[in-house]
Image 1 (cartoon, rainbow, N blue to C red):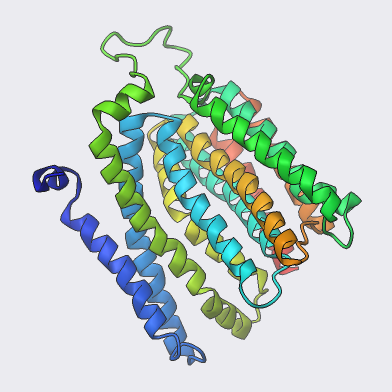
Image 2 (tube, rainbow, N blue to C red; image 1 turned 135 degrees about the vertical axis):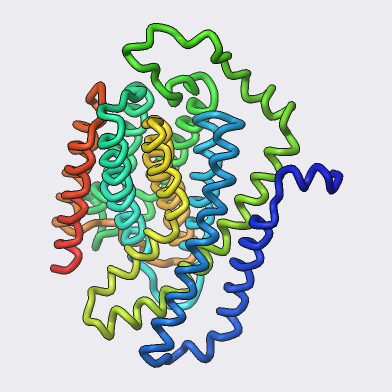
Length: 380
């Protein structure tokens, strides 16, 4: 690969973001002893610097994700960003479980926070701003229905069923094995169909007022042809996306102890730290979703948000159950009655929203209101 080729796709700002992100992570490791018991001002400054670095890196991730989405088209472009973030998140949750201490509820708490953030906060903001700018947005209801069918089943297996048939909120080993097989099998089949025979179901729907595609818009070539013709660009941009998103996730989890300390001093609930970390981890995806809504691309919003949650549940739950069996740890997945009610209401609202031919700002406002209710439950 020649320097000229690299210069076409790698800019000075890309390199600066990578250096800044990884430099901040290394500096945080070096300064760990100093941040063990920081004073109030030091804690605020440290958190401010970390969040600032994450924001700068997040825009770099969004840049590469949008370039890949433009080159590959949906659902492939959105899938690259989604899987990059989700896989790293799953690896980090698994690493926490394999580390010292008891972490019986980490998967439950993390996925619950991600569910509320994606399905209500991010979707709500995207639909609100998109609906205010464009009015009703037409989406591909077949693809939306496929995501929602997956979410209903996966969330029920993850959080509802262990409440009813589990022991002390956790599946028994005899129950875990079929749950792992069913979850992985269903998710793998979904990915195969999304990238194969049903890829068209996850592409933008034509407006009802447009009976046919404009003549100047050529049909997108098959994904295999695109990868052959633009292999170098795809590899470079995918590499840039990964090396930029990794420090975001690492910094988010490294600042968990600082957030716990700060929230403890303020008297805030400990679970709020997990919510804030989940919001930061999925920041690049959130920014991309809102920008897609502003550009009147509702299906891309759905691919990013619903796809992220399907991947999160479909990968996290089997991973933690396998680790639990291998290490003898108890993995508590059963949710509280209040959280189960919130999950059920969220799924019903999501079904009502995306069963509509056109999604509007009113749908977005309803999702944001439900996220507000989640905040009330969090502080109760």
